[in-house]
Length: 146
Image 1 (cartoon, rainbow, N blue to C red):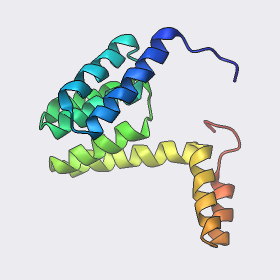
Image 2 (tube, rainbow, N blue to C red; image 1 turned 60 degrees about the vertical axis):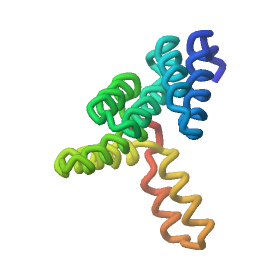
Image 3 (cartoon, rainbow, N blue to C red; image 1 turned 90 degrees about the vertical axis):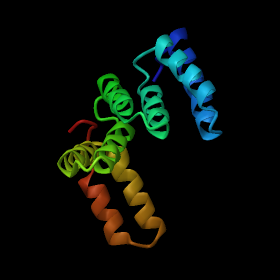
């Protein structure tokens, strides 16, 4: 789209990637350092907050995980990963009402996201479910945010 990313944002994306890779390897100290570095570089990179929440959850620090997911939503309202993780965390804690609320929010944002409908249609078409594919295209908003 012609926009230029500033250096801090690029650095945050880089550190987030390193943090996610360390998380996959279960190198939690390195993951923490990289993810905090990503957030310090640019706190608006919601994926860094989500990954930090996953790290906290894995370490059993559930209130910190919840707070990190909340920060991800502040940075990017409607972040599907943050909402999905919040729904899972709420269900794990036995708060089905909150989990249901988060799932409803996920559905709300999905309905407004034309890419969600495109991928649904593409998957259905690939599996020869043509009627379902057509329905997914019909349900897609004409413009993002519609």
